[in-house]
Image 1 (cartoon, helix red, strand yellow):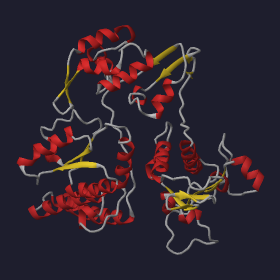
Image 2 (tube, one colour):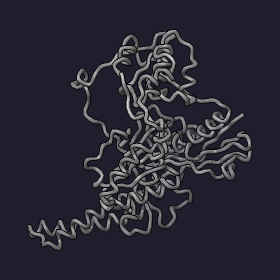
Image 3 (cartoon, rainbow, N blue to C red):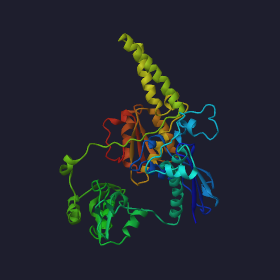
Image 4 (cartoon, rainbow, N blue to C red):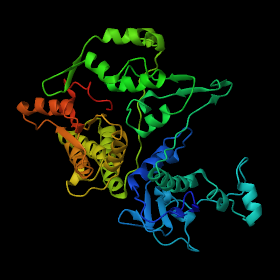
Length: 443
């Protein structure tokens, strides 16, 4: 039997989870735990706290050389916001010297709908902060970390977890109807998810997707098989009729695609771009916010002060010399670079979490076979940091920048397009001109 216990406060040093009952010898993937914590941070209704935190679960005990020992597993999720709350949430009777953050007043008014009042009465607290810091949504980070371990145990036993929505308000899915809301989950026929979904017996099946008919015919076959496994006929025959291969067996084109459209017509409802163009929203950008380290903040503040002095001079004299203009541009550029990493400024240290966060995000994206990613950055040194992390994870990539000889540029683009092992295209502004991105699904 698995049991878990959590401890920690929302703005304390961190959250702790202890999981007891895991068998010895279970392989533990800490990156997978980080991905589960990232999913929590991206959930609907997330607050501003998610902008500050960048959760990772540290294994403190119970795991050695990547495998459980049979002892309880202790996990720690640090609170980055702790540095802003040290004078309020310190453990010692008095705040230690050097503590940071404001000394916040006691909370004396319970919030409706929370555990504030019940906790204050039960434990006889005068400062309700002792209750709300524990009874906080932040505590769920420890639960997700513990759940990630349980999920890995289930995976080792051949069990996968899936879920779906059966109703929203008054709109519900009819009984005995099987709906897959994202076709991308079953487009790879060889995944456990696709095989599990297709084993569910149902007289009706519906697949919803916002994308065109995928990228490869094999993906189309897998999706259509979920709706009507006999619609396209034997897969080997279907592919032979519509794929064009070179002498090495590589797919270089397609033929008779109109026939596929006619074959799918009875089971396909598709609205073309021209039909929905007026109904489409504006482009949606997904932004990830990460905090700066103390070292980054120091560089940023030094250059911000330089900018402030030069701007004050301009406001006073309504004139800036060429030297002042140059210093202003350099300071502004240094502020921007410090937001990425101190490596961009001194080419030695690497204080900053942005490269690590991107590496984790790429690992999550590239779990899907066939996915390719283009990463743009103005700074070549930022790409150098990414190259280190990609090499460590053994992710194939190419680096395209202004220093690459013209004779080699086409080869790099061709490698990204044609080499299945080349998953990431790193490019500076030089790579943004005339680059065909049709082979990348994420930019």
